[in-house]
Every structure is written in C-alpha cells, then in structure tokens.
View 1 (spheres, rainbow, N blue to C red):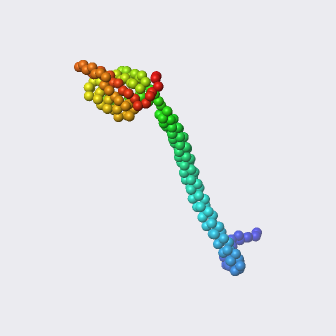
View 2 (cartoon, helix red, strand yellow):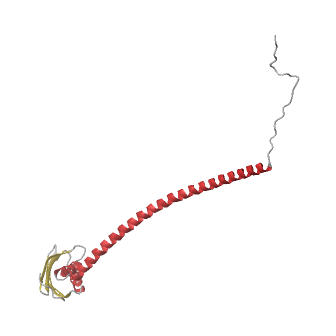
View 3 (cartoon, rainbow, N blue to C red):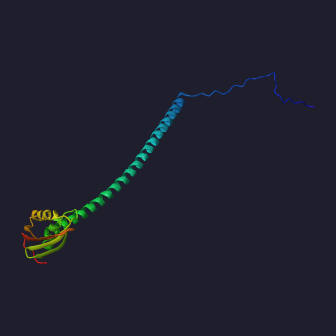
Length: 187
C-alpha cells in the first residue's frame, strides 16, 4: 500500500518570489501623457456640453421672442390697414363736405343752430331762391331769440327776421324768414 500525503508538507516552506514589474521611465511618461490627454478631453467635452445647453436655451428664448415680434408685426400691419382705411374715409367725408351745396349746406347750418336740450322743433323748412322760411315750435319762448342769434352767427344767412310768433300755455309756434348770402339752387 502506498500512502500519498495530499497535504502540503509543513516542514518545508519555500517562499515563492513574485515577479517584479519593471516600469520604465518612458512608459510612465506615456501613461502620464495619456491620463492628461484623457482629462483634457473630458474637461473639453464637459465645457462643450455646457455651451451646447446654454446655446439651446438661448435659441429657445430667441424663438419665443421671434414669435412675439411676428405677432406684433401682424398687429402693426392690421393697425396700418385700419389707419389707411379710416384716412380714406375721412378724405371722402372731407371731399363730400367741401362739395356740398344747396339744401345739404342749408340743412347743416340749420341743424347746427338748433339747441341741444330738445326744447325747439322745426316743422317746415322752405326755400325759394335766396329766401328761406323756417317754422317750428318750442316749449320755452326764450329759445327763439337764441336760435335766431345762432342762425345769424353762422355767416350763411345775411338776415334772420321773426315773421310771427303765436304763444299759448303749452308751447310757442314761430315763423322765421331768412335771407342767404349764397344763391341756392331750388330743390
């Protein structure tokens, strides 16, 4: 029978030597350069990533501002269109006002002279040549002289005369005869 001792022999311990690595100076320099380059590339990558984020945020803000400015531009164009439309209307009105003659001009002067408080009503406005007859009624008798003064002040009438006045308890009916400074064509 053969006996085999599978356990190590305790008596003879031999120390094994580990192989020592020999690092050369060149290898150390190359490794240091590699580490420095990797650090520089990492720092550069981080810097560029921050710049990209900042530029993306700035781009988004500029797009929002551009949309706002486009909206304002559309509003300005709309206001300009409305302004031109109103100016055209005003020019037409001014042109019509400058060319109005005859009965239209007469009515404008008479309407401007009627008191705004609603105490005087006109019932007849008759024109024959340069003679105009105005008939109406009023609740206040003192409104008639004010109306006559207003008619004289327009410069359209050379004379404004009271033809008749009939007063009763409720109202006063009056009739005026006016002569115009312009010869108006008949209606």
